[in-house]
Length: 311
Ligand code: NAD
Ligand code: UDP
Image (cartoon, rainbow, N blue to C red):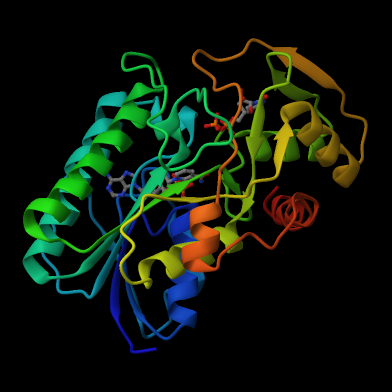
């Protein structure tokens, strides 16, 4: 593969740091840009010495002037706990961030990838969710700053593509987990593992019958690179693991892995919490020859090992 200069916004975050690693391993030069809201220098500290890696503090709501071949736009807090801390900033990051990376891509002729989300489907009525589904999103709820921000970002990507011929790739990412998730980010996989390791009770929100489909981070990053380097496919393309679990099943799997004496306690369900979520990945299978390889049990083993280390 030809050596490219690649910009990763949000590159010091959970997914971004794994992507930077992958791109360096493929022989590319990586420019990692982050405002360190939820990302940390430690996530990429092992890459700092790499001659092809550069880390820059920058907020994507400000314009960007660089010369690169490809742009992966990941900058945006992903956990409800983080994106609801400052909802107005979350929308600005999604919308102004998209305008700024698209403006850059337009000016320099770079290909640009957007990390969109299954949240564009909201609380989905169609199950599993194909890319053709328009979603069921509350425009004025607590999750709207994230969901609607990401929806507008998708719109901007397709308008820059139609109006200015910008070369775009849009991935709709479903719940992803793995090493470098933050212990305190409030997401279900990190919460359950940390609680189990500390011998605390596992907090099930609602009755625990709501479902999610969990993708291991290495599988997802492989999907990113395949989509970015595919020809003639703008997306949106669902990237996620179609194996679906209830939160009760997830809790049982975590307890089976960690052991200990934790029990399950029920807490109120957050507002607008989606009932069910599972990607239809037919498109990714057909066009990218991609599907997840790491089953939940194996991914949990690797993630538990990470949390044992950081705790
Ligand atoms: P994360 O919070 O670990 O990473 C986001 C990164 O973006 C952090 O490093 C943060 O500091 C940075 N950032 C936030 N606002 C910024 C700004 N204004 N300017 C510059 N940098 C900024 O989350 P993640 O799980 O790594 O998610 C990465 C991307 O993938 C996000 O866009 C998220 O919406 C998307 N996504 C993630 C998941 C998932 O399950 N992890 C699912 C769907 C979509
Ligand atoms: N959840 C839970 N206990 C927790 C954290 C989350 O039962 O300690 C539930 C949450 O209500 C949701 C699911 O797990 O139904 C996934 O939550 P997460 O925040 O990880 O992701 P998202 O809702 O954004 O898909």
